[in-house]
Length: 126
Image (tube, rainbow, N blue to C red; front, side, top):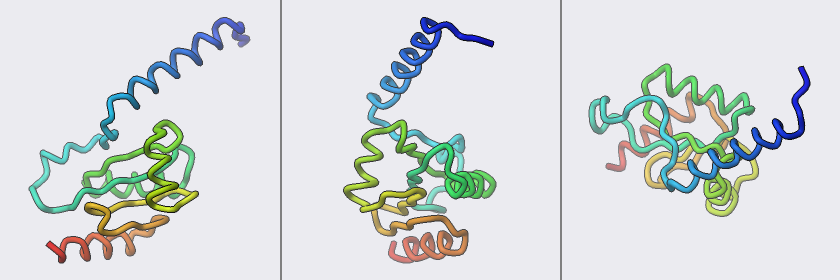
């Protein structure tokens, strides 16, 4: 199948416009899990800085989703503000980075045991 240059340019412009509209909303993208439907207080806020192609990011997303853990996914390739936070605030050049609570715990990489320990530490502070 051959796409014309006009069709390719149309697709690029359309995708860029959709991405721009999503980024301009200023709201981090929420996972498909509705945190309001879960019992209050079970988990602190969890923000996952990720990319779509990262296997460790995928593992974290699957773990959170499978265990009904509410999280905000910020794809740093689609969200310039997320990339800026990743690099400047969290001093990371790689993903995943998981922020638990209000910057109370920052995990670079994903390991189930480390994540669970981090959540417990933040929960005990409250």
